[in-house]
Each structure stands twice: as C-alpha cells, then as structure tokens.
Length: 368
Image (cartoon, rainbow, N blue to C red; front, side, top):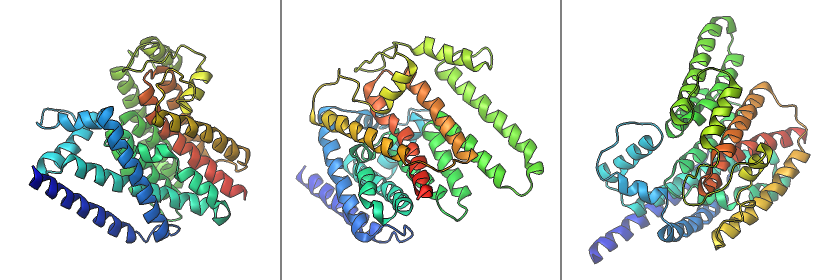
C-alpha cells in the first residue's frame, strides 16, 4: 500500500512538472506571457483541488464514468460512448490512475483557458486588462474544466475554436476538426455549430456556383440528422413544422424530473431562458454550501459583465456570426424549456455564455 502510494506521488509530481514545462513552450499565443500562463495554471489547480474534495462528498459524472469502464461493455461511440472510449483507453490500456487523469484534465483545461485569454487580450487590449482577468478568473471556467465530463472537453474545444476564428490566418481545417470532436461529445451541439461554419466556408469560396449543390445537399443532410437526433432523444416528429417540433419538446419534457435537484420549467420561456443563463441565482431550492454561494456571486458578476459588454457593443455583426447567435438562441430555448436538473444547467449554460462573450468582446474591440 505504501509503495503504491509513493509511486502515485512520483507519477503525479512528474505530470505536474511536465505540465509546467509544456506551458513554458507555448509560444504561439502572442499575448500570453510566461507569468500569466503559470499563474493561470496554479489558479486552475486550486479549483482542481476544490473539485476533488467536492466530488469526494458529492460523487458526480466523472466518478461514475471512471467506474463504468473497467470492462469494454459499450457499443456506440457518440456522446457518453465516446467519453467512455477515451476513458477506457486511458484507464485500461495506458493504465492511468484517477489522480493521473485529473492532473491531465487540469493541464488540458489550462491550455484551453490560455487560448481564451489570448483571444480576450488581443481584442480588449492592455487598457482593459482588468476586464480580461475578470472574465478569465470566473470560477466556473475552472471548476468545469477540472473534471472528466463532457463540458470540460467541450469548453476547451470552444476556447480553441474561438481563438482560431479570431486569427488572420486560415485555420478552417483545424476548426472543422474541433467541430467534429464537439459532435462526437455532444452531437446536437456539433451540428448547430457546423451549419454556420459551412456557411462561412461557402461564402469564402472562390467558386460558389460549383459548391452550391454540394452545400445545399450537405445542409439538408445536417438538418435531417438534427431532426432525427431530436426524434430519437426527445420527440416524435411527424413533419418538419418547427412549431410542431417545439410543441412536442415541451409536451415531452415539461415538469419531468431528471436527477435529484428538481426545478419547474413551466414558466414563461423568456424567464426560463434568463434563469438558465444565470443559474443558480434564481433557484433558491439549492442547498446553501460554499460552492453554491460562489456560483451565485459569479452569476451576479456575469449579469454585470454581460450588461457592460452589451452596452458597449457597437459593431455591425456579420451574417455568419448572426447564424451562430441564432443557433445559440435555439439551443438556449430548447435546454431552458426542457432541462430540469440544476447540476446540468449550471454546467451546460457555459457553452452559450462562452460564445456570447466571444461575440460581445469581438464587437467591443471593433467599436474602439
């Protein structure tokens, strides 16, 4: 037992040193100084420790998933199946321990945040360094990128995608790969991001007539897959009438309990969307513990922060970004009207918030 514990400490210490060394070699992020990178890594590591203790008392998806892959007993490779496949390789082939896994997730999450930091700094400039750190130090960005759940990987992929979107060079192929991975982790989200991305590719192409038919065909295929996905997971679609589809979603999910912390979604949809976006402020049924208090304070900060960015938003948005916003509004409407588990809300809302921050920060920079 002592020998195993000692070996575990040695391996973990090696992972930490390797992580710090790797961060010193990240030179392509122009605005990320070494001191910033090291600070964010250790700040991120504090939340790693918090999550270790918190999930010890309140086991979450990461703990359950770790125990579920001792044997190869899953037969599909999307969503949870894809997460299990990666974990099966790490646990049973590479033979990582759970503590090794958490330290690697800590590194991956830190790298994602550094991509986002570089984007923020390039858009807001040195005059707004306080605003940059206010965004990058938000607790949820560190809590949900420090455990092996879908949202940890999706947020990191979004950070990279946003950074690539803001670069002058053409990184369309790499962006496409990030969307594929997002699709593998959460299919409907990958599809929602893929459609505006393909519009961007089409608009940039030199021979639009040649690509028009393949683009229309592929777009129809995407829409068909999206409807088929919702039909399999949520609704029985008898037509392509969007009002009928939304009606089925609400009828299927309204007031159905998913998990231990139940919330009522039978409210006016604007109220649901606002409550979802700034959860857990408007969910008083939550138990009062340090993590929830921090998240409530963070929600108040988010309201102030987003209000400030919206007030300073003067940039005329382009068509592709308008499509991204439209996709996110659809996503926010669906999840706000169907998700009745507070824990899921608190994590999944960040996909929408991150992209809102991207749009608003980019617009703020254009204004100045």
